[in-house]
Length: 559
Image (cartoon, rainbow, N blue to C red; front, side, top):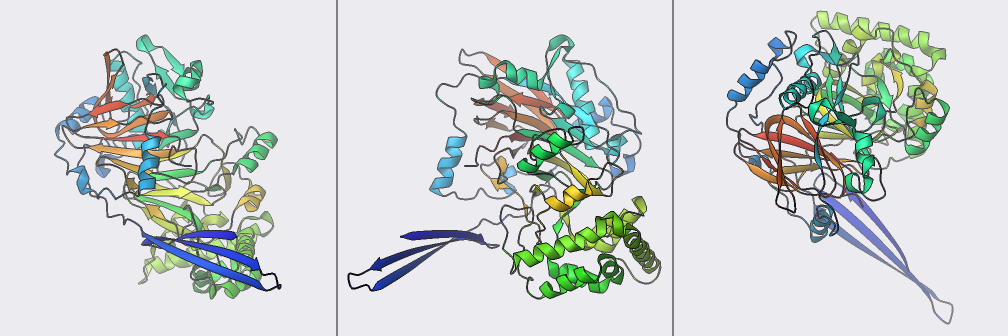
């Protein structure tokens, strides 16, 4: 008997189709084939909109963005002015789970019988001064690292510091990557790198068989567009690191997931469906001139065939195109014409032509649409870069507060604006091709891309209890939970068989740990502060004014 199973997802259900084929041969040579098909449709929970909470926020209003970072007095005043928060359970209901889902979650959150009490330790985190980051008090990443340093000084863990207003702070890093190592703080200003700390007792701090964290956790504050880039898969990362270790600093892959902290987060991700790309070739003749007749003809031949495919670029599954090979060839031919140096002068000429036309349109009676606005925005920063035209063939998405976007390896993307937390495999490998003054590796990027077309899939995560939302990617390296408590709330962050990092995103409260001998430990946690938590370690969170915490860890839910 042969059996074949296929699972597909629609907007409102998951459909599993199982086909069993049985072939029998009778003594007289007659062949009989019986085919049985079973179709099971399971409704998918819908993600209602996230209700805006009024947790105290520690970033200044737009009118104060360029003034200065908030002082300790400002922060104290913000805490006093906080108001009551709507009940967290109003965000969206906890969905009903199947028995299999319930069992998997229970196993993931249970501690082994022989596990030892773990550690909960305060961290000092690195920050990155990339040019695309926000400056002054407008950078959440900068505000977090400075606010944490002030709290550490109060408890004697370290000295506080201030970042000058004119310094762009793009990212805060939490993890063990050598390019931005976190440090475990002890009293009297003594600290240990997080990697050295976990390797002192790897069975206790990372789990049996591991001696490092599988994930890297970040906060991003985006002041201007990042480069058009992609991250390598594991096989490519090993080769790139061996060949160019100064550029590709580790041999690991880098899938990643972004969770927006603001409603103005935008990005480019993946190729648009081919019908949309072809429509833009017709609408913008400069675009068609830039890619050349061959690419236009290849897209035209597919435009009427592929309008229904491409459900989830950046997601964990995707509808297959009518002709995958032809689509791959058309997208690669189109993209190659933009970025290869032998056609650069011709493409840049078309970039200048379209930007001039759109500016004139904007000055006259016509209004530019969002896509045209992004093209003009790119042109103001990189006027001679062919990738100014990338919004015409990449998806432009707006990521609302609380929404997440998963980005596979080998997928082209670029963040444009906003504030977000980002979790990824423990890697810093980036292959760039445009919209950047940094080193470009065009040939590598052309060879590595998947050239899949389709629409991105965003998610609000999955509510797993009244306080907690899980964001789970289809990889084992990482996942993220967010925990929101209203004023005077309490909740237990359950133990998991993975090391974890907790970050306070909004508000403040306390972490309580109780040991087997009855002794207790308390750590104060406020905006920007982060802690390392060993595997199989339970902590209770309590708050007077409300708190939002994110927990990054290995993906314990991934089989």
